[in-house]
Length: 102
Image (cartoon, rainbow, N blue to C red; front, side, top):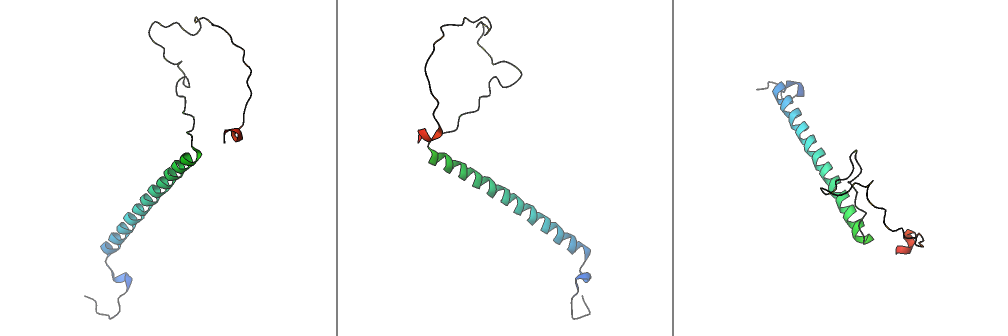
């Protein structure tokens, strides 16, 4: 195929170069996918270990009442504006910091 004893890269066919470029792009994409999955797994493991060592769960997110519409109520229930106020109770309380929970 080649008359010269030394092979030069410019003598390779263009289809070979395009195949090598395609293979390199596929390998790069797979490496990025694997890296993204690895980062996600490490974050998941870190959050699970943090939750396990802290011994308590974070407060859940309150989704109701955060949008434009008020939270749903059962059919026939009085609206909050018409609901009776009920009894007001005055209690004595004090705040404690996170160090007091340990």
